[in-house]
Image (tube, rainbow, N blue to C red; front, side, top):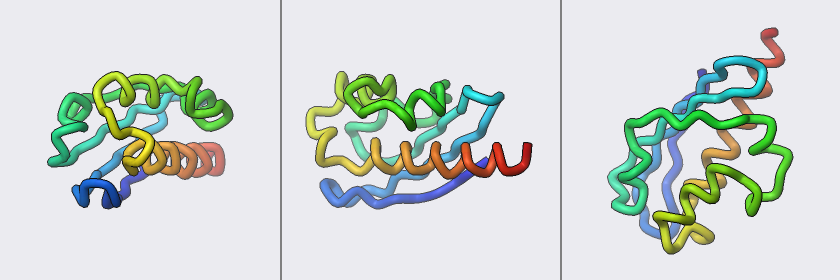
Amino acid sequence: MYKCEATCSLCNYKISIKVEQKNMNEAEVKLSSECPNLQQFTNIPLHLDAIYEIVNPKENSQFYRLLKQHHSHIDRCAAYDSVLDSIGKNLGRYYELA
């Protein structure tokens, strides 16, 4: 499991991220934040294909599309980049241990 915290430069809210690799591809991401734009995604597990999220441009990202539906300033928000970075670090640790 990988945990980190980021502060959004747009709204100055903290974003806590937990990523746990379930198998070779599937990652479970949990977010917590006081940001009103992220409330729909907090404290519920998001199941994402970690490798797909890492290797594809953000326009093809499942997580980016979810955020874009509910967050009007997603391109300036730190949530996507912070989660993607956390997925990458967790994925690296998973394969290092495997």
